[in-house]
Image (tube, rainbow, N blue to C red):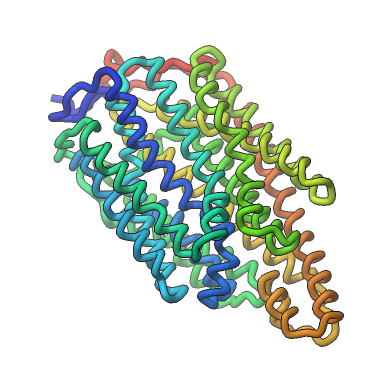
Amino acid sequence: MSDVRDPGAPEPGASPVSGARRWLVLAAVSAGLLLISVDMTVLYTALPTLSSDLGASASERLWIINAYPLVMAGLLLGAGTLGDRVGHKRMYLVGLVLFGAASLAAAYAASPAVLVAARAFLAVGAAAMMPATLSLIRVTFEDERERGIAIGVWGTMAMVGAAIGPIVGGALLEFFWWGSVFLVNVPIVLAALVLAAVVAPGGSGGSDRPWDVVASAQVMVGLVGVVYAIKELTGPEPSAVAVVVAALAAVGGLWSFVRRQRGQAHPLIDFSLFRDPRILVGVLAAGMAMFALAGVQLVLTQRLQLVLGFTPLQAGTTVAAMALGSLPVGVVVGALLHRVGTRPMIVAGLATSALGTVVVAVASAAPLAWTVAGLLVIGAGTAAAMTAASAAIVGNAPAHRAGMAASVEEVSYELGSLSGVAVLGSLMAAVYTRTVVLPAGAPPWAAEGMDEARAAAGELDSGGSAELLDAAARAFDNGYLATLVIAAGVLLVSAVFALLHGRGRRDGAPAAAPGQEGQVNNEMRFCE
């Protein structure tokens, strides 16, 4: 007897969800997803303040940001499988508890090392929650149109959370200490915990799918190696030994992960999924949209504060224009996908985001209104691309791989965000270090970053201080413009790839599993 289960059917032991309760389930999982996304970017505006208070170095600042998406990306695939085994409601509730506890630990961290550890602990809770959010939506919404709207809301929450993270951080720093950006999570966790416990459909899961801890560790080692190699290569004084060790760890971890997956009866990733161009394009679009979003937010919020002198709240309010641009788009796109198709929406969304990024780059010497306009365009484009990508991945996976497809989708989000911060953040720092021309009398360590230059300026007389800050600002802007150009180029190339790859294949029903040709879930049809 086949163990294949329709991904839209309730979990074993679950009860059907009807009436307004469905939308309460959506509210409960949206709150969790919003928390996960906000914590991805909330430190962008808080980073200068907490760096000063904790005495964090440039390397420690990078890991304070990267520990969260890095650990989460490494655990997501295993967490999705564990949810299939123990039940997605249970995973979501456990994830909320872990997230709340980690938020308390991060809020009262006494050193950069403790904060990095707390951020990693936050990622454990987020990894438990994130696959369960989409799985619970699939279980709860049986009507095709309602499910499309719910997935649109789901995708929009991811985008909005990432976009409002900086403004949340900025607003809290206006009145409280930097730990408040984590402490604010606790009441939201408690509310989502109560709501999900009452309204979310339960289920015992299935014991037929093992949880591969080894594979999760392998992929995490590989990702840590990749990020550390990038950080070291773009640092002011790269160490050849560190780069080689990190590269070996990356290659070894990822190679062993791929090899293990090919020999597993229940792999965390079935790489044959990527033979479907619709799924491949969706994964690429999701990753590249988050790559640009995270990178642009990081460099822009830093420039607004360190170069233009904005307060954290002012910087966060400016960057939140992305959220305003995305709010209506995700739901509208979700409602139109069955008519327009996923590929045109992905191409249009990525191209629109690229255009917005160019506008933000050109507007660096223009009035702030032009930057805000560019951010609105980026938000609209990213929301369209992410919503269509979600539908392309989940809607075109065969029924027996639906849970795996959801995990792959979420990993693409996290890897996109992680690589955007690591690559674009490191690129900006590298360009700054290599182009800054320190005036006479300035300490050499002012070349390490804009934060260090500002600290060094406080030790000089007024003339020397102004000269150093001017030189640092010019170098910072060199890096800022370079990162925006790279981000726009990546989005444009991704749009062209999405347009051309697999054009002969039409979006339609998910592919059937071997021997399951008559049992394909044909709930979601998306035509090109």
